[in-house]
Image 1 (cartoon, rainbow, N blue to C red):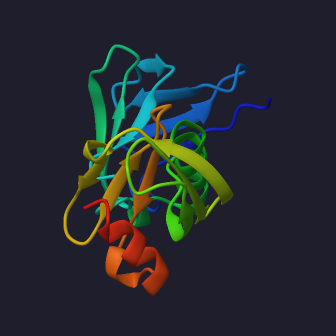
Image 2: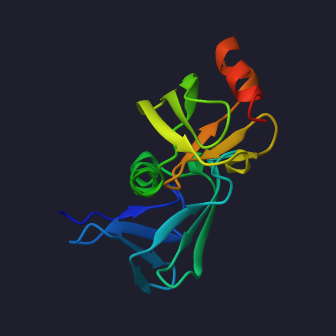
Length: 166
């Protein structure tokens, strides 16, 4: 894999550089010239504000840079960070609840998500967490998180099923 260097502040004096090494891992070079390998971008608010507030942290968890918003980055840097986030984050968004096996838990749910149709097992009602209204986070029996961004935007059939568990 070819290494490419990109700056985070287009048109300004770069405060850091970010590139992939030959192993495909991100390397952060700060304004002081010190390189940090295997850095990780982390969203501050991945559900409520995914494009605002992003931290670049070292492999030992220390923050190296703060980015207020992805829009302040040039397209190449933004793409590099989004690719890295995409490879680490997996949270399908439920668009429709097709059906459930039973209204008691555990129950098998068949849902249509942004990643396709799937079936998962809900162990208990406590695995449905309310987030900032009107969002919900549902954890399946394997720990996969499914997001309902706006429960009021679901179709009537889906809302009726969901109401039985809330």
